[in-house]
Structures are given as C-alpha cells and as structure tokens.
Image 1 (tube, rainbow, N blue to C red):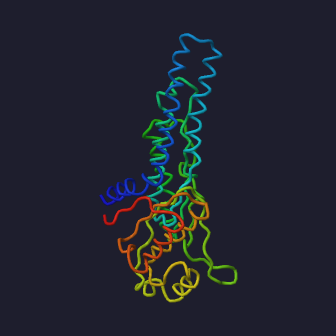
Image 2: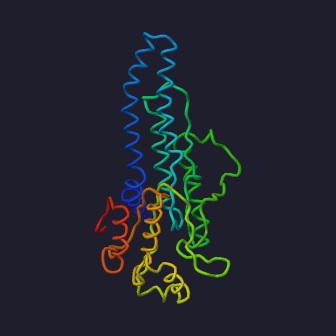
Image 3: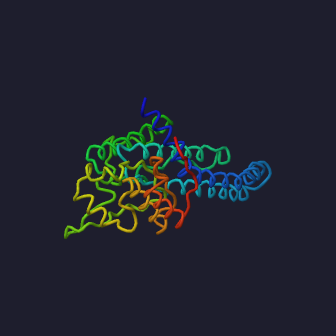
Length: 285
C-alpha cells in the first residue's frame, strides 16, 4: 500500500512537471505541425503521384523521428535513488509517451517504429549497497513489465533476463575523498533532469547520526555554499542548483520537509532564485 501512495506522489508532484510536462509540450507542437501534413498525405493517396506521396510520407516520418529521438535521448538522474522508485516511475512515463507517439494516427501506415526508450537513459546514486543493487533490479524489471504489458515482449527476448545497469553508482552523493584523503565534491553524472527524494536530517542531528569526522569534512567542503545549521537535504538542493547553473542539467525536482522555507535552509533556496528559478512548489503536502 505504501508503494502505491509513494508512486502516485512521485508521478504527480515531481516526475510529471519536471520531466514529462516539457516533453508533452514538444509533442503537442509536433502534432500541430504534423496534422496538416497528414491531411495532405491522405488526399495525395487518392489524387497525387507516388513521388508526391513519398515526399509527404518522408516529412511525416521526420517529425515522428524528431519526437522519438527526443524521448530516447533525454536523461534522468536520481542522486539519492534508494531502491529506484523515482527512476521506475520516470521510465514508465517516458515509455508511455513513446508508445503514444508510435501509435498516433498522424503516422498510421508509414514505416514501422518500435519502442527504444531504455534504462540506459537513467542514472542513479545510492550509498547503501543493498538499496543500490535493488534499484538496478527495480528499474530493469519495470522495463520488462512495460514491454510485457504493452505487447512488445516477443520483440525483446534475451538472456539473461536481468541485465546489470552500470548507470546506477554506489557512492556518497555529497562527500568524497581524493587520493590524499582530502574531502572533495563527488561528480554527478550529467543528466537533463534531476529528480530525487534526498535524506532529511536536521542540522542539530548531523553529528549524532553521521559522526564528527564526516560532518567536519562535509562542513569544510561545502563552506560558503551550505550553512552549517542547514538540513542535510539542502546539500542535494545546492548541488542540483550548481548543475543547472553550469548547464549540465536543465531542471530539478526534489522533495524536502517544509522547514526548508526558513532559517539556515532558506539560504539555499535564495541561491536557487539568484542563479535560476523555482517554477513550482507546494508549501505543505
């Protein structure tokens, strides 16, 4: 039951506005461009030469391929992926839209197209070994489930059934060490979209939960960017903000407690507003 509640919240509150809404706008624009071409193509089947029909068919195919290529190239990162809930939902929604494009009447009776959106487009970071291994399995099973539920199983028979997903990394997302043992900022994979449910831990509980050594190194590494009194979740907000400012990500959607609005936490939100913007938020849920 809890998974049903979580997946619904992830889909509606995070994955849909951050990942899918921009893609749906692109798809609407493609449909608007393709509709008059389809009318001309259908008329040409009755009145025009094969050359004219082929020219219109080629234009329609190009529009479909433009949208499919977009869906098959978009990348998603969850830098606190746990057992892969966000990645699972993102993959399902991407593949649903891909199927909608493939089966659209606008492109009926043209060249065949098959679903190619793949788990390789998904990236994850998870510190816990068991959760990391589970995330790869969840994403891959979700992919196979979608193929089976949508009638494509026979086209993708393979052994072994489960393949490893190298894009999900077992590592700490906010603190790493160089060869000399100095704290350094971990590298996140570049991705168009970052969606995540980072860990919440109030500033007053950092040392008791994470230990003095870890907290001292974390404070030293992030000094000047994240206040020392801030909730642990804000480190993910700042790192996502920096990725967008740098151009290695386009949008991010992150969960937090509503206390992120005040105190030391608010400094991180102010930096987001200064270098970019907050386009959607809920004050309480």
